[in-house]
Length: 372
Ligand code: ATP
Image (tube, rainbow, N blue to C red; front, side, top):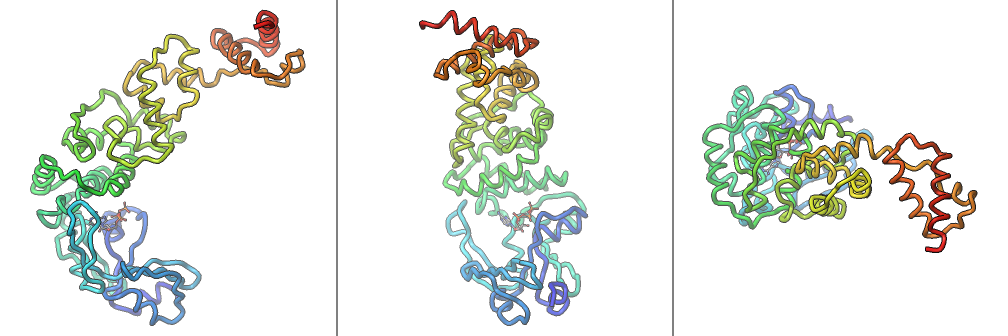
């Protein structure tokens, strides 16, 4: 048996959520979610040629191996939000497909497609909203239950060029005027990452102009006058945390950052305090920073120094190394660092210096500082 045989044999299996939306929009899907109307664990236990790899009975999910391939299959489930802004509580596993889809964020994500018949299950006019490029929540409490949906809306708007339907925009604005900051910021961070990794000026200006940023800070934030998308695009391959370039311009205090992310934000703040008067200052300031901090400096200061560093100064390095110093009779010591630093200063003034000239300068430096 392979998965297609399974899809064609049973009539309670559905593609669900984003994958159905993506089929209708004709976009490639990031992942394919499959749901059993009923209990997926029991369903899979009764299948032949299906090896259960892992189960999570609390969520009703199961990982299986069919014909050497791994699949995650979910049960239909009904959820409620006892604590607004936090994880929902599952109140029923194996509910109707209708109850499963109406717990979702936007109508475009509340579609299911029967794997056997190909019939699209659409209780909430999701297809029409896809056609009209509209993002519509399923009920008026949606953002109160889960404010991360506001960021998800921004993500889908950016990705598909959709806009919020009028009533949904009013609900969003109302929520943003009265935010409950007691929320799960881990989920918020995940959504910010996937949204701002899209590197979109448009998403960022909506985030600022529509005051969506209020979800992560109580401060007032203005849109920087800088083409961030273009800047990030230029260095894209070197950047691991595109999202953080956008979000550090706002505020990261409420988000739980990892070590690297903390360093990026701290270095950026420190850079802003520095007086970078010459090329040597620039190199010394930026050389141990991640590219995100350097670009944040550029966006904030807009003085071209970070670009000069990335495009030019960064490449200028002494050619001589420790072995060369040993060969000219300088015994290995802490002084090596001072010598390299001195050569760097000279090389920044004159990038054409040859290795021979560097060695001569090193020798002179060593002579002049012998007893220091
Ligand atoms: P992507 O293409 O970014 O993966 P997706 O819609 O598949 O988009 P997921 O985050 O994988 O996004 O979520 C899968 C489905 O789960 C969504 O399509 C939606 O139906 C539902 N969902 C996800 N997050 C929420 C949420 N915060 N509130 C309600 N439903 C959600």
